[in-house]
Length: 335
Ligand SMILES: Nc1ncnc2c1ncn2[C@@H]1O[C@H](COP(=O)(O)OP(=O)(O)OP(=O)(O)O)[C@@H](O)[C@H]1O
Image 1 (cartoon, rainbow, N blue to C red):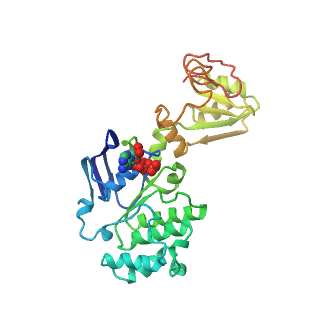
Image 2: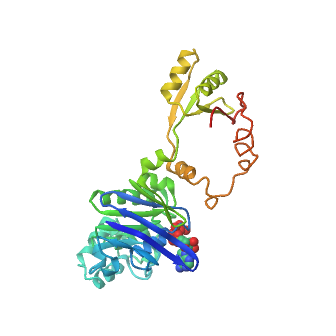
Image 3: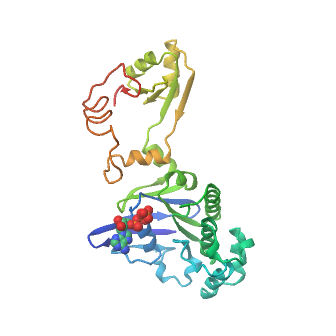
């Protein structure tokens, strides 16, 4: 278990981490999400006692990690997989770590087996691919058989096989009852790996909830409908308070009405429906929605600024004309 209370780190006049309070629990993979520069690495370094907080505190299993008697048995961490002596074999690298931390040499063989590195154990780690280097970093983190594991951006630069391996491995570690805390700025990856999320932005806590809760809080379900008579159905739906857009192919996207309501409305008005599909937003879409008003996160897209389509004062935007006979791509109905 990792517990942060009011954790803060100030670098000059920059607050890299700003009053973070959260708990990372055992038995699940907790994703630590935030855009580049949000403060993830700084937080992880403070958890490991590599940086001192300016204020607040963080404990691992109830104690500051710097005070741990046997650190590698307490926490296994992968912060920078490239930070290894490339001239040594994987076996010797792990053996050195084991010996300097009073861990039994047999543990080296066990972690090589666990991470699938047994065949290449005697090869120089300097010649390892990025994926093998990550496996070696994870093997080192597992040497002390710790209950808490922390990985900083572990899938950066990996190919799909490497990503899948790490994802499944983390889930296995969590299923053994360990605390698994993994940072990433890749939303699509976290959606498939994490059960719980801690989301930060500009050093501050933005969300602490399950992946499912995060998506449902920050997005709205949409329903796509294909019909030979899109205009009639769009007007009927707008009359019921739904927000409706269509594209050039006639496919309608509806917000604010369920598939059942749409199907019933079409049936009652004898409108043929050829396709009716609910769509739940991805974690990435939910994150974009949550941060859409935060200028630090992204530049305004072309055409979405004031006066552009969908922008304030622009067609379909607040204060702009609401055309009930919308051209493809425009929106009709309440906002
Ligand atoms: N030693 C330092 N001195 C000054 N500023 C720092 C230092 N370390 C980090 N920062 C600043 O603190 C902020 C948070 O950085 P941090 O590396 O923790 O973010 P991050 O979320 O891990 O980002 P990334 O995904 O890019 O690694 C950034 O603005 C960064 O420039």
